[in-house]
Length: 407
Image (cartoon, rainbow, N blue to C red; front, side, top):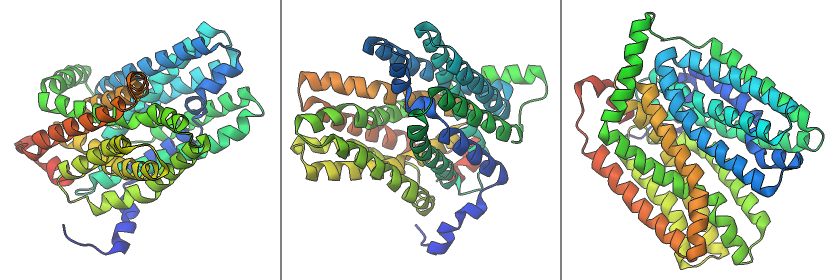
């Protein structure tokens, strides 16, 4: 890898195209006001619902989120990424406003499932835009720039929501609706690449679905990303249980998660810029090893030292995996089919993050070490898949330009 001046790496933001800047501004506003996602359980509890009802609602929201990711990729192929983002965010804003009015359990769950679908539906379209408009050789840094807006927005949203929730739940929900609508306004000015003829749109939609389902290498690769996300999800599954069992402070969990968020915000973008000339399998392999090893380390015991080392490992691993996974999806997608590939990637990630905590807790009840052995096995499997598919992948003529950008 060729060394570059540090100043040049830090000035990469100047290379960000205008549409990507607009997209990241919109997602920052949306995530900063994404109060429903952050305090979903508290919102339901505040309406007097019982714990079993909250559990059912959370499970349904997770399932519909997975469906939304799949639907978003298909919609972006047919409608175009810009229209998909606009429609999804407008619908999400309207549903969030309705949530402020409806208070019954069934009504609330139906609305929340709709919000979950819309929240996931725009992500493949946005990722497709970032991949398509990234300057040559800057795909991973552009995804890191986009993810930076997401992370800062979520952190700001958590602080704002904690302040507003103590005063008025209705104001909280309406503010979420307004910020989501603001994202729709920003997305309206994005470039549109939807085919003009309806027949072309139908052909692209059918071709996209068939193309990604026939790309067995990519589907298997997404299994690896699902395994990594499943392990990463143990931060809200096994980790709190392990802290409690070993008499560690519950407040320490929040402090470590805050440190994780701060580290990712500060270092993910410069790290992606530093490694942008690496073949994508290298950072993905390192990241998978760090994330899964960050939980497997608890096989040596749960103590302050292993906790700090473990959190440091999966935090660094997150910085390696997140931008390069999205960049790889853009790299492997044939021309015009990036939304479908990003949709499958988002389904894999969402499935892992949704199922991970439940799987980890279930395994923990069978034996304290089983989840950690499982994390180690998942890491080895993910690394094997990544190396087998990406390191040995032959460059196809139609995907050569994209390969040059990522690798």
